[in-house]
Every structure is written in C-alpha cells, then in structure tokens.
Image (tube, rainbow, N blue to C red):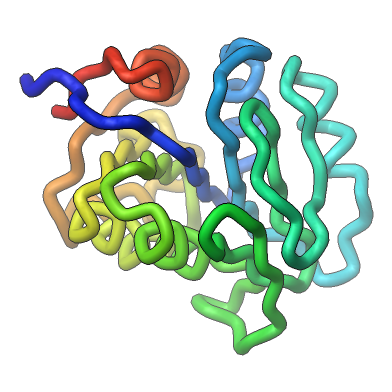
Amino acid sequence: MRQLQRRVDLVVMGASLGGLDALELVLSMLPENLGVPIAIAQHRRADDNSRLVQLLASHTRLPVIEPEDKEPLQPSRVYLAPPDYHLLIDGDTCALSIDERVWYARPSIDVLFESAADSKGARVVSVLMTGSNQDGAQGTRAIKRSGGVAIVEDPKTALSPVAPRAAIELCRVDHVVPLADVAKLLIPLCRGVGKLS
C-alpha cells in the first residue's frame, strides 16, 4: 500500500436505490471536524421536498444543505444535490444544472463525479454505494483517470449491487469495502494519513 502523499480537497458520494440508509450510516460515522466538504448525488424524484436533508442531518454532526448555484464549498459541510438538478463542482464552488438526465436521473452521480475529477484532479475521493443502474461507473473511472481515490461499496453489502458492480468491472478502483467500513477509510484519507490502495 502507498501512503497518502497529497491533500484531499473534496469527497463526492453517489447512491440510488437504498441510498438513504447507506448515506445515513456513513455520515453518522464521520466526525464534525472532518475538514473536507462532501458533495452527494442521491437519485430522487423531481418533486421531492427537503425531507431528505432533514433525514440525513438527523444522522450526522455535519451540517447538511442543498446548495444554491455558485455556493462556495466549505470544509466539514455536506452538499446534497437538490431534486431535479445536477450538482457539479466548479473550482471551489457548487454549480447546478438542468441539463438532460443521465441514466434517467437528475441529479446524476456521473455528472457530479466527472465534474469533481475535472476540478479537483488527484485531490478528490469518490464513494459509490448501492444503486440500481450504472450511474456512477463512468464517474468513478473519471476519478481514477484524474488521479483521485475511488472507494466502492462491496456489492455483497449493497441493497442494489448494480452500480458498484458496474464500477468495479469498468475500472480498477482503490478500495472495495463493506458499507460499514467506508467511514473508516474516509477519515484518515481526509486527514492526509490514509492508504491509497
């Protein structure tokens, strides 16, 4: 294993079917002083309300918000893609888009991950969790191509293994771990003391 030699500026997470439970578990295990912003694309209906924000916020010590367009990224804060908008990373800010759906979804995991790879390069960590289609696989490959660290939930622990399995088949990810171990990997990576692979 290689020791982490670089700063992590951003964590991006993606999930669809079963994602609420998965996100609640991972976020509940992260400290309030994580020091790195987290951006999340969770598949949700266009008419979804803010209940998802409230549910996630009730399971974590990190503030959870739906960002506005051009909202600056701040450390130790969770940015959840609003319903019917793609969430992108543009430098050190969030960007919202109503471009076409990807894998029938807006927000799309691929869109978030690919924009993070473009903006942050090797300083981003991605986490792809449970999902019922291949959204997130191309984005995970983009993270790897940019030099970032890609974590994928073990398909055996995923409510729907399609998304994590697609990513594993498409590219050589850094870590395939049970959902309960995701936070254990993220914390040292965000603090610059984790293992790359």
